Length: 90
Image (tube, rainbow, N blue to C red; front, side, top):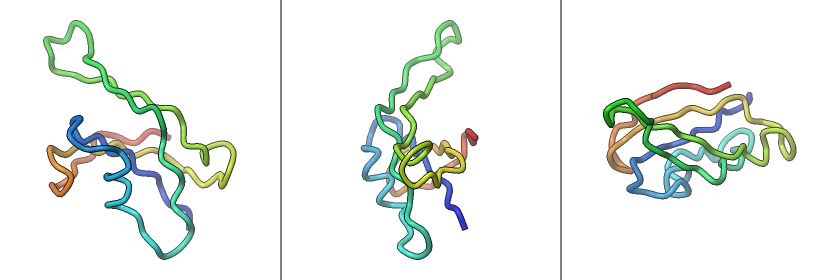
């Protein structure tokens, strides 16, 4: 079974490492390395309603373990809050 890598956007309140630690599963295959260089900018000309999220691929996406199936983008206002899916990137 291949696991999906979760990309957690926490509205700049918490680091990606803390978010990844919260979702790691110690059973089954290893969890892929997180993406790096995660950045979020305001979407221009939309009246402040959108964000653009970009990242560098996980080192396991093409090389390494090659076990990244997709990136799930989740949103929460706190690290222990409920996460809401904002999309899946194949």
